[in-house]
Image 1 (cartoon, rainbow, N blue to C red):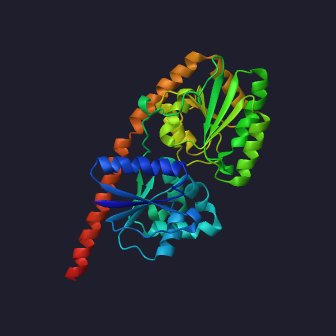
Image 2: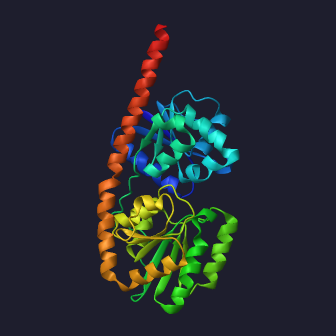
Image 3: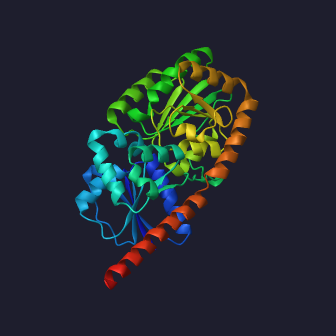
Amino acid sequence: MKVVLVTPYYHQPRGNTVTVERISLGLNRLGISTKIISITKENYFPPLPSADLVHGFNAYEFQKYWECRGSLSCPYMITLTGTDLNYNLFNEKAKDRLIHTLEGSKAIHVFNEEAQNMLCQEVPGLKDKIHLIPQGIYSFQQNSFQLNNSRVKKDEESFIFVLPAGIRKVKNIPAAILLLSPLYEQDPRIRLWIVGPIIEKEEGDKVQKMVKQNSHWIRYWGEIPHSEMGEIYRHADVVLNTSLSEGQSSAILEAMSLGIPVLVSNITGNRDIVLHGETGFLYCNKHDFTQYVHLLIKDAELRAKMGIRGQKYVQTYHSSEKEARALKDIYHQIIGCETLNGIEEKSN
């Protein structure tokens, strides 16, 4: 079986890129041949290689690609992203294009029940196409820590918050700086490491200016290959997520898989994978955030217990092997139906 995976902005280390690469590797291990096609880079829409099935990530961007390349010669399915669910589905200019793409698909993949319910409420006719498959997780091995140790140093007394995110408005990175700043004044052990590419220049300029003003306790690492993120995580005491919206954050799940407690905004997507007070903390406002930071810093036993529970959760519900097998089953169902339909058409 040959499957083409079509994703936007594959040239940047975004969440979608991590997801697509992980899925491709998992499918390869099951004997499925995959090819990843990047779209939206400088409006370049490369031709599709021959395939049995096309799997698109981000319905809205996939529709733009489809319109540019003309009709597809094989069936396709769609994985809905956080941008689809939290923005495109409710945007007048994007919604029709998104729905048109989903209506033409043979299957729709979502990561969680909240996303499934949201889509069913907005477009009830799609209910029978939807498949809920939790996101799998990339496993960081000790021997994959490739960053030069001289670059990654942690002061013995410091307490490091790591925020892995591409810099764009939806990730709300300035909030992390503003929320932690008064806490640093109270506790100078606090450090903030921000890791990720600049995706939106204006937001990038804003964040870099704030980092420069607080360079004595904040470090911006820039873009780091995902395979090398294990070295950053290894030094983290807590991993942050301050996003305004999420689909299902692979960074949060990666942190939990490594036994790192998480402090994340209380939004759809985050609350689906973080059990408040058990595997991490969900904050709604500045008061919450401040309270949870104090708890996490002073209570090492709490951090350890959260880390253990987070690891168990990820191991139980976010296996990359289960993810790949579930997708393989959907692929076979789609291709099987297409083959049967073809036979029926020829016989009529």
